[in-house]
Image: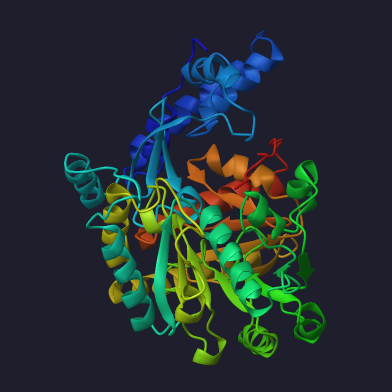
Length: 486
């Protein structure tokens, strides 16, 4: 589009404490919009110009540099994702910039990945140092960092009050791989208990998400994800989250493993009750099944403690704990932590990885874990949760028929809406805030853990404006699709 409104400068001015400047700019753009509305321009062009004038970060137009780049690249990419129009090229702290140089406050953190923010300077420096030292050797040889990271994972986990039996770690590349290893390990334990293979069944729960590989996908009972690739790996059964009464029928003598998220991320930020997790642990003990906690999204201090299950009594701790996402702060890495009873059943050749635990990834994760386990950071997470909840309460009062529930803990929070939230995602993005959805009609908030109270307040003001546009002013906003696709 030939006419390009400098909307970020307008937004900055309107947010500025200099009312005279803001007022003059507002009047100028208001008069522009009025002039366009009274012109003989085609309707679509009128709407585009008014949109550019009124929104700080409108989605790029079809004639934009972004659109040209996207259209040039899409023919060569397998169409696994539906992405919104902006293309991001730079990040710093809690902000992203697109190729049009427009800034966005990020409440998504790469889906709970960038816990220390985008392009953390210490991490960037370390990456450069290690890249000039040693990147990859394969697991045919020792390197200084795979074992060092494994040791730190065990020490930090047990010291935090979580998984007191943590003994060893398997380092891999992603959350799906961490869960795939956990599933295989549980199956191996089942085989050692009953060599006939009868003890092979696996239990997971509705609304869970454990990954896209065939094993982890089989543990993710969502027809949308499973149906195109059915049949699933045999032996998987699904139960109802937080249903204590159903546990005995669900977990049987044929069960080798049970996998559960202490807080379901993709499922709608649903929190497991301590009573349910304890009952599940007790039932696993009764039948000799391995209990796996998937803390890929909710772990690593996102709840204000290193692991989301850390406040549970030891009697409720898992046999296997999986992690990824925040472990590398954007560098792909995951880990499967096991107790000694599981570790003794796994022998050379049972499992492996080419890239997992390479010196570059392991050193980065060691650094990130050291920082994420800081008690001061964890304390600040709980304080920031309070700030979010204060604003959620205000929003709920303003939109009582729209916001029905607030869920979550720490900085993994969800707003349950009575209507489709995807137009709010679009409206917020076009005002400079990135948010995502999950579950059914749930807005999900998983910002960087380093986010400031000022940034939270800025973001919540944008969210209120977006919700007002969608639900109060009934503006026509197209919903953003695909925003809970892991």
